Length: 203
Image 1 (cartoon, one colour):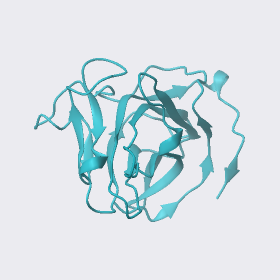
Image 2 (cartoon, helix red, strand yellow):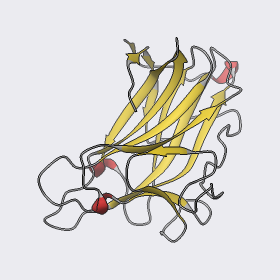
Image 3 (cartoon, helix red, strand yellow):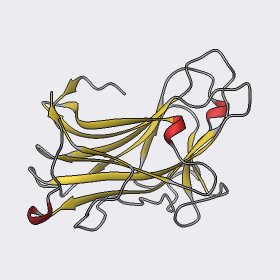
C-alpha cells in the first residue's frame, strides 16, 4: 500500500482509556467471523505476509479468534497489515480507533518485530490520505496474559473513513522471532458534548 498525502494530525494517543460515546462502528472487530478463507476475517482486508485470522492462539482478549502476525516466519523487510472501510461517520466527527495488542517476545539471538502502527485515513481526490497515525515499538506491547490498548483519536475531515493496522518486521540481520496478537478492534464516535481535548495539532 502507498500513502501519498498527510492531511493533518490532531489526536490523542496512548494506552489509557478515554471516554467513548457511541457503540463500535467496525464490523467483526474481534475477528470471530470467517471470511472466504479460514485465515481471513470477514469484513477485513489484508496485505503482506503472515498476518492471519487465528482461532487456536492464546490468550485472546475477546472470543475465540484474533489476528496473528507470524513474525518468526517473515522473510522480507516489507510490512503487513489489515484495514477496514467504515461508512456512516459524518465529517467533523471526533473518533477513536483502538485495538488490543499482545506480543510474544523473540527468543535469545533473534529479533522482535519493529513496530505496530494505527492509522485513520480518508480519500482525497482519489488518493488515500492519512488523517492520524501513531507507532508503538515492540517493547511497548504487553506480553503474557496482559494486553495493551492502542488508540488514536482525531477529527474526521470527510467521508469515507478507513482504519489501518500496520506491522513492520525487524529490520536487522538477526533471525526473526516472536509474534503479535491483535484483538477487539473498535471505532467509536464522541458526542459533541464529550469531545476529547486534542493536545497536538500539526501538519
